[in-house]
Image (cartoon, rainbow, N blue to C red):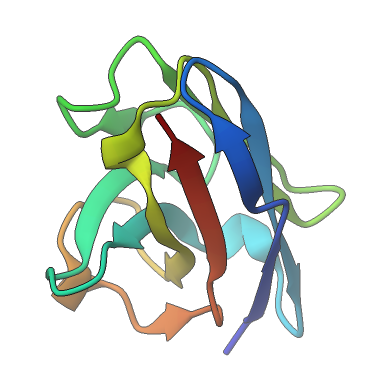
Length: 124
């Protein structure tokens, strides 16, 4: 399996921006659809964004459409999540996930490889 490590989290004021990165090692990232999920305290992990193996298909949760952008660079084995116009409700631990599929999965149970997560805190 591919090994995933997230970075880029931190504390930001509402309206600000952060860019999360997910570095992959161990396998060819281009064989994996990739997703970003988040989990707030006391809540279930939820879908944020996903991108297909080639980057040609992308899906977003309604709550982040128009504010977040997912991208990938298979040559550099990285997946990024640019987050703009951040809101306090975007606060949580953000996880990068991968699965070998041609689809663009949006459910937690569809992914079999996860990073350790990075904390994002948006203050009001």
